[in-house]
Length: 305
Image (cartoon, rainbow, N blue to C red; front, side, top):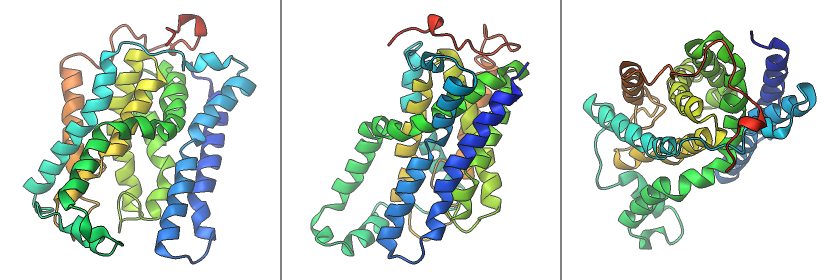
């Protein structure tokens, strides 16, 4: 049986904190494009910690359990960290290939988008374009996922570290789908401001929900196998580091809501196929995880880092 009071407290705090920061830029008035972008990114990055702070508050002051019950002292089987690090780039490449296959965008190995941006930057014309491309790819595959964990842990400590275990008495599928829908709705203020699906402020919210259900299923599979928010944060960090890289290789002017990133429908295909593989190989639902009880939140069962 799920604990509705605890879940309600968690959702109210997570949404109020995050949505306040997501919507704050709308009240700041006119500003130059560069400042506006920095303000948006800063406030949205802070907003990512809404679910994590909600999980901490509910755990300590509502449920009155120790901080260790959030399982930050747990790692679990290490092989899932390989999945968390490398699966997002693979899914991103698949999405890029489908973007080309469906004719949504054309391959551009002259990197017109980067060249144009560098021409407008001071001294940008002196930097080799290929060096920029390689540095972006290498950063996305190496340091990017780890650095992004500073912010993605804020989400994953809440969504997978707290909410998912609370919903597991409903069964793995229901818990994963419901948590994914909630995760998608939580993004709504950012989506209506043009993020991820530019030009589709309303439809984009529903597209984000589909994306979060698919991606949430994959991340939840990693979490249930490790019972650790660290693997979820790493997977999310890898996603944020690599998701938009295909855009560098595509001609400007295409509809970025439909292709070119991991959030676009062209990438949903790869995610759906991976989930189907998990089901077909009986990797999901995860065997040995009872569906009528929550993942134990006790510190005594945690495997120390």
